[in-house]
Structures are given as C-alpha cells and as structure tokens.
Length: 156
Length: 150
Image (tube, rainbow over all chains, first blue to last red; front, side):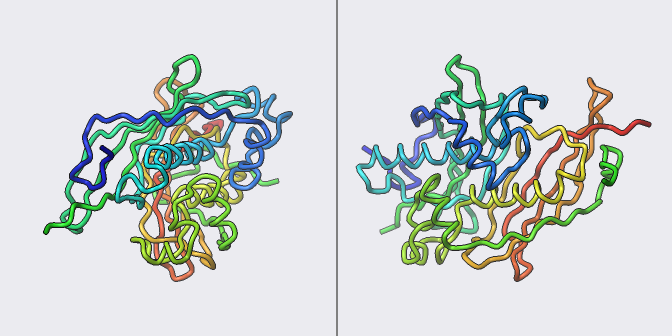
C-alpha cells in the first residue's frame, strides 16, 4: 500500500525515478534564462573552456531530478498525491560530480534515509532523502540530501 | 575592463550585492509546469490551501533565479573556476508573483587548496531578500577561485 502519512514512511525505501536524456537545445534554453555562463550557453566557447564542451547548469540537473520525482509520484499514485506532502524547507550537500553533456542519459533515484519529529510543528514530520543521478556507465553524476515536510496521521 | 577579483580578494565578511530579479506569475507557473508541477506552484487556490498560503515559486526556481543574479553580478567580477555544488539551501519564506528579489553574498569561509597552489575555495552565504527586506532563502555556495599572482 502507498504511504500517506509521516508515520507510514519507511526508512530505506528506494524509489527509481526513471531516466532522462538531456538535449543541447534544453541545456541552452535553461541556461540562457538562469545560468548564462559561456560553457552552458555557447557550444563554441564551451569547446575552449575547462569542460571541453557544452555542459548543463547544475541547477538544470537539480530541476530535472524534481521533474522526475513528481512524475514518478503521479505514476505510482494514479494522479492522487502519494504522501500528504509537498513543501520542503531546503536541501543539503548537493554535489555536481561529473559534467552533464548533450545526449547524456541520467538515471534518477531517491532513497528515504531518515525521519524526524518536529518540535515546532506537531502536525508535521520531516523526511530526509538521499537523491542521486547516475550516468549510463553507472557513475554517480549528481547527489543531494532532500528534506520534505510530511503530514502526521491525525490523532483521533 | 576592471581587474578580476582573485581568491585573495575575498576576505571573510566581504559582501557583494546582486540583483534585482522581478518575479512574475507567468514565470513561476512556466517553471513549475516544466520542472515541479505541484498544485501550489501552479494554481492560486491550491496555493492558498497549502502550507505556502498562496501561489509560490518552486524552491528549485528560487535556486535558478538566485543563480541568475549571481551569474550576472558576481561571476563576471571574479576569476571563478566554477562550482561543484551547494552545501545547503534553506527555503524560508514563499516567493510570490510581484516579489523583487536581491542577493547579499557574504564571504563565510575561505580555504586554500592543499593540492593545488593556483586555486582556493570560497564559500558564500547568499541571503535572498524580498522587497519587504525579509529573508526568503539562504544558500551556502562554495566557489573555486584562481589565486592571484603574488
């Protein structure tokens, strides 16, 4: 059964979020708007940069992780929210370990690693997840620790 | 062309101002539809009923807008060699349509590279303020900088 409340969240559960292929067009479109450094927006300049070619903004990779997480949540819940969740207070320890280049396919995942009660919000609990993207060779490309508020089961 | 700022030019506490960024409803919804299609980032009524108390930008969108301000106002000044991540992000207050954001980036930590004498690591505490002077988000952002010729 799908978990609904913080009480139902099980530490150690790993969700496979699926794969996503980055295109040059998307990399440039995101970066023009949000991260217009030459190695993200200009293929020719990128050739001469330390990266040796166009690479995606790290924030683009992060945004695609979120896109995949929401899509997976919708798939497994048939359109209704899986968890009484949604709002996040932030994240920790985000690392861009390998450049993401046009044509690369990343495989995204999310594993619940901890859950905590919140002294300030007895109606909410915190859930920590270790979120990752691997390339097709199995190398870790991207990771961070996500935090999410999840509703606690109402006391009857 | 002014001289670039090198690792040595970032003593603890030095502060840089970036921005402003004008946040529109269309942009909030457009970003959310593509990357974070949760109802409270797309629909006014759903936002009101959520913890956010109204339509609000995705936290990932706030990261992206902050990056844009940093890229426009900070990176061109510095002999930057890129970043490899973000140590911490705290999304503290909702960012809403009509908000005007700015960033105050303060040098919070500096460290010479042990293995490479030509670079150093500088971590900025980036406070994102709205037009009411409230802190909307805080990002701890490490950047790699070239060291100046001593």
